[in-house]
Image 1 (spheres, helix red, strand yellow):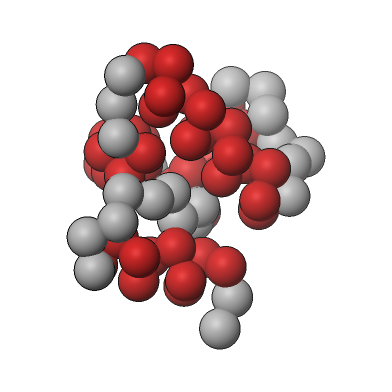
Image 2 (tube, one colour):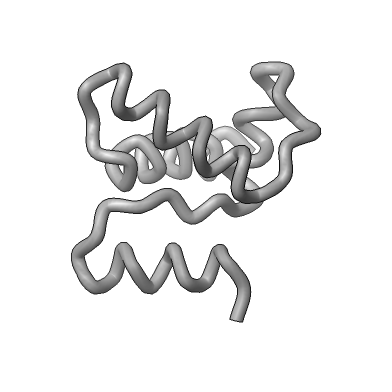
Length: 71
């Protein structure tokens, strides 16, 4: 089991986490951030959520929805 699966399961059991998938990677690439490892990109999303005053899982969901509908 990889880190994305662990993070996704965390969300399912009520933790607010970022599970970086293809949509979150594409969003980051659109912003010019494409060379980060999984852990680095997850941390960037978590820090962004904190700066914006949002839960990490909420930011993840918003980005995922945006990218999944813009493909």
